[in-house]
Length: 612
Image 1 (cartoon, helix red, strand yellow):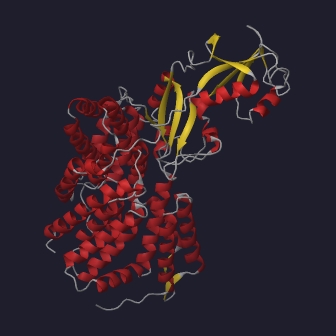
Image 2 (cartoon, one colour; image 1 turned 30 degrees about the vertical axis):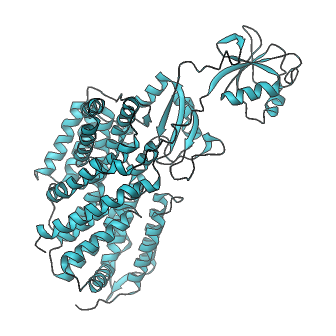
Image 3 (cartoon, helix red, strand yellow; image 1 turned 135 degrees about the vertical axis):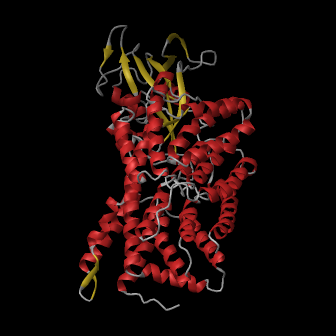
């Protein structure tokens, strides 16, 4: 093989790629900010230092903006919005009902049913709504059947990732790999072209998740299950001679270190006072407050007041008359990408005012401890965070029915409307039109989006909420990096170096080693970034070896989808980690053996299919 020369532009692009992969792993930096930074550096660099040969500009800054109009990105965005319609109309309710009934009768077979159903569904739509659909069902079933939800939640999530590998539209990663390979001159993959290898290898993976994975997982308590800081509404009656007698409201609040929140002040049956700091409290005044039992008893003691239930002013709180939270329920709300709470604070989202729910506690999925200090309302929430809320059953049901947030309250009620059949019909058209080659998936998905809006299955606000800015930005930036790697010859150089390092090995071993490299990368950085950067290198490797590029492209696709080992490898893993109370080590317990099974399986099947 002839050596490949590299130039300053190629080296700069490689350095920028390494910086990008590093930034993509930084949790403190928003993914969209990292992506925009890299895109700006690329555009500015090739503008200030043109890449030209013999006076001809080979790569211009405008080439890097082409990703915004990339066919794969259009398809991904349209499918996100079409999938949102299935979620909001409750089109998957029949499946949810079947799964729920199965869990109440035969839990072992129900787990297999859940895994297979999740895998099949994820072959045709985004994994996130499927996981959001199944998680409350599993939580509710675990409460009724008294089995640990941690034994089934993680297998379910990983099964959807396996299923997503099987078709061109299963994940955004698949669409990107197919789109890039087509741009680079390869034939157009059909929707079900590689479903056979995924069915063979993925079938073994599902058996592992069904029979072995639950035994590897210890019983985990969900983050909020052992925490019940229920808030009680009560009244503090001001006693004569107590600290609060004759004091202003500001002095009383200062005595409580500013921790007591007074809803209203009642002086007589018909007189309520304004909560002015200067108002002077008198014996017999009633302060209506809300807090935990411990705090309420503390306020009673330091203020020299008498504590009563809000609906019982005859019997002071004691051992025989405990505090009551009548009609109140607790629920856990998991923050998902695209929800009104994502990357916002409770105060900014006006959570309490909008939903009539009181936030009690917060579990941060990326933090080593669930203890959170400071005002809950001012903390910026991230995907996977779990919020413990209290409110009436009606308020919790209303939040759940809104479809805007994932509520885990042990019930299986799901949104359902008369438009569900329309949504299923439109989705069937999108899949069938692409599967039978009538039109490209980007075209059928855009038409499907129009039909969803025209038939009332989706409105523009819901459609906009389905779009993920981080996903769009990382795809565009990764496409730009991939174009720069190819245009400067750096992809060919990396391929030459990889082939040179593995030249003593047979081609199937080189294919296996490259797939393992992609698998390791996708568990550290975004799977889309790994796929977009890996695809041109894979084609270059196949060219160096003089073999068909198809198996190497599929090696990128399969490797980039094997996000099993870390909770940060795939966005649904974060939701699973939160709801199941998992630790990082739990993903390693199940993810590593599953990755080994899938990697060995594909390393055997792909060479056999393509005669390597």
